[in-house]
Length: 169
Image 1 (tube, rainbow, N blue to C red):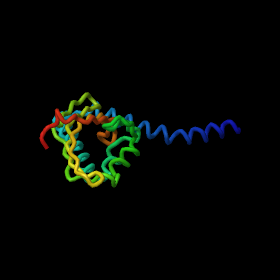
Image 2: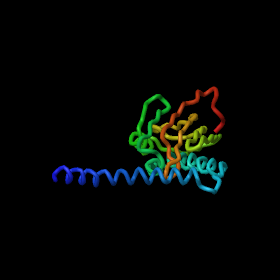
Image 3: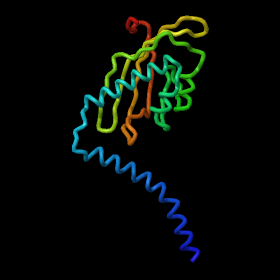
Image 4: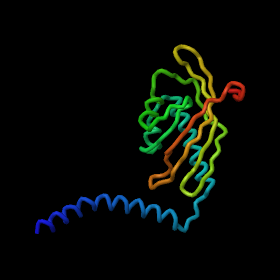
């Protein structure tokens, strides 16, 4: 009798996890078998918009966008080589040490491979760091995965451009 009660309790505990996994699987199946064709240009434009929204959030030192769009398992690398997770990236964005006069994402290119997208762009910024005006340009790449709640960033890398290859701001 005790074995039956223990098995019943275990079954109830696992039911919640099973239901969440089942919901994710059902959403995935619905996206794959839907009769409506997904417009690749609309998906591409959605990611372009997310890239522009990210640049705006950086300019405003606002981490809210990144908390919403970046996956909890996000793994990135800053322009000077430092690895960061989602929490660390939000802290970098919200840091009061840098005040941006402008921060723009341009030359945004998106390639979509089923439920994964790769976005590359040029980040151009003018900021004030320790009282001095600084202009910089970086090449950024972001890996997006389309899940049950839409596109979210799982990885990113930024690379400083040396002065001899920078575009006019």
